[in-house]
Length: 74
Image 1 (cartoon, rainbow, N blue to C red):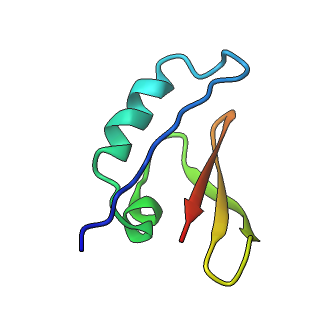
Image 2: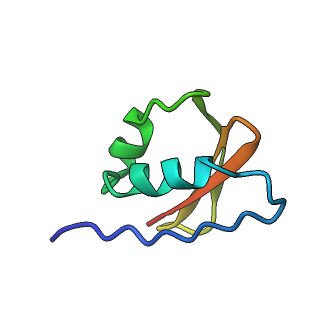
C-alpha cells in the first residue's frame, strides 16, 4: 500500500518567503520517513525533537533555517 503524505504549510510569521516553494517541491518526493531524513536542503535540516503522542503516533520536529517543520508520523 503506498504511503500518503498530507502536507499543510502554515507560515504564521510571514518569514518563509521562497522557502515555501522549496517545501512543496521537497514534499512531492517524500513518501516515507526515510525520504524526509535523506532530504538535504540548505540550510541543513536538523532533527530537534521527537514527541511521542501514543503507541502508534509521534511528531518529529525539524529546524530548517528559521523555520520549524513538524511531521506527524504514524
